[in-house]
Length: 297
Image 1 (tube, rainbow, N blue to C red):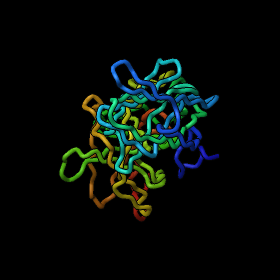
Image 2 (image 1 turned 180 degrees about the horizontal axis):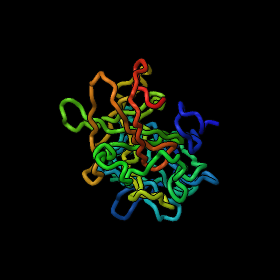
Image 3 (image 1 turned 30 degrees about the vertical axis):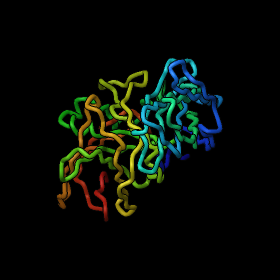
Image 4 (image 1 turned 120 degrees about the vertical axis):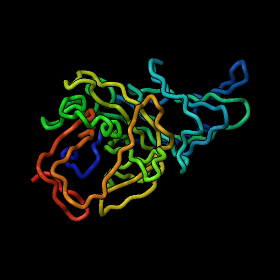
């Protein structure tokens, strides 16, 4: 029934809270060149994929962290101290399968301090094959590559979905009056879980044609953000990504309007229920509803 409640983030996995620390868990080895390596294996039987969240993340200069699938076919990283949020939190995106190896490689000097606080066990396909309810959207939800979306190319590039452990929501990069490219991200307050340092943002998760693909496409990810503002009355949260999206992500910073008159029509760009990025059109006039613009009858 949760899947039918639009006031709640879509859920695809269970968050398992653990306490694993580099100082007490895992195995340390020394490489021939003097560098130190730490590894910890994680198994959560039956998971379609796993992701990890840390409540402490302090790495020495030159230290690198990786997440490896059990078969070594998939490697996330290298992550460094620069990936930490203001509150010291850090999280990874998904790695396929129910088993993974966490790995740190660093210089002989300096001691890393990281503590694994949460493992997310995805019980729905969240990355490959069916993805998160891949292609489940209704007929009014069109892939952003469809001709209906022509002319909205820039705004489409601002939209991303993000995971919060085993749940997900949608938002968009938004510009500021200085136009300086600060990576602010606007989303809904009803999605806010209080820990943006553990959010992972998926840019460009979309079909390259109007047809639905049979396989989940690749995406570009950024880990972590810091809180900036929120209000329940207008259902918004503003966070700042921990790092600027690389040029290769080809993102856009959306603008806004302070117009007080209702528009004659509207479009919606989002990831409904975690699906690929979709585009919808409302051809009726928008109406006012307290702190919101109303869409539809």
